[in-house]
Image (cartoon, rainbow over all chains, first blue to last red; front, side, top):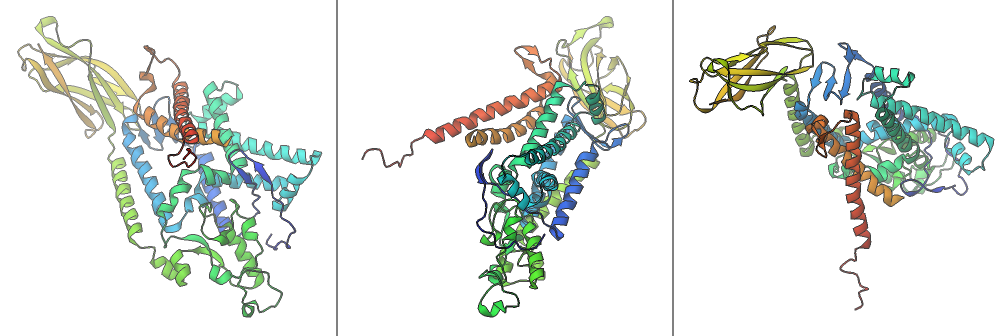
Length: 471
Length: 81
């Protein structure tokens, strides 16, 4: 690419009643360069992670599995139970603050490089380009009357998109149901109705969002795109057209000393507009539609190189830097400012707390529930009995035998299992009868304690309080 | 079409959040439906739950849309001076 298109006659514009908005169809032209390469690196990184991680085994199970049926989340060596919801909440807060921090410093880095919408659009566009050709070929194909060739190209494109979308849906469901079993059930036609439904549902979403809606998702549907401006300030890096350098724009004649004639560096080749996935003209200044993908930077740099003018007519810069003509050193110096420091301080505090929480996460949990049917009763030998249900949760990766003892009242004793075995990441509920002599403790409620201790490890112990009703 | 989507899409997002919060806190096996314990598989309960949340949120969005469309603004000048 990178040969500026000869001044085209009237541009062909397709206005389509698309799913979300009446809009002009955008035909992003392919682009190469530093930023395009980084974008592709991110595509690979995120997708190798997404498509691959669910296949990774760990201790005889799936390394990352959000087992909804068993209500347990496995992430490598960690097992999260519904009781651990606080960790999920903290993780969400960390994500939010990272987003704030990144946005304040680097603008829409998330949108441009990491957002699944961008990543899948990039992949779907790549398929489209391989099958139908680049921008000009696609515009022509759309304008052509229906023909065998057009039908064939369309069918191949939609087919390839469909396969990828189905695989994406399958992978997604594979994070919630063990993926190897899921893969097996595809082949012996025993896929459950809900699994099938969610594979198709998520697959269709991928297909429609990445194949058809594309930039409309960012422009009209994404809540983040609407409020990201709040995180921006005049020192935030954004993709900026240096108007002072570029204007007045216009074509240059070969060898012409255009600067002496009052012309700017912009040759008005419109390639920055053609490569834009959201179809905007960056030369009109910062717009909320700009997802910060930097495709126009790569495109413009190539043109500038051809024209023999310095690169960076469109570049990552800040409002202040453009106004005061700062270099990189000055821009970097302005990264450290109150907003960034506050975001960073909060973020690091929460991350530290999160790591501390994970490291000190208990490996044993016990719930004691009084039997609702029996309050207190007299049993043989005149003893008074209360009945409890103990729920012992082994939150560790190894099977454990636990010893259970009861204390808190004179001559207190229990009937039932004193030693129980719980499998790794498993739980067990069982009933114990606690008995005391009638003269032990006061009439009414008394505090007693259950001690559950791992037999192999003295440090894994839990003491749970309970009430004992004395008659 | 645009109206339908601006009802369905935000409600989809909010339903996703509601689903996550609700089922993190509540075990589907502990739910009762018309006095009977829910006997669907967990996956079915989660799925049906999600669509119920979606429907409820969509209903709310739809009413908002409807009211916005038919409300007469107080400063309307055509109230026959």
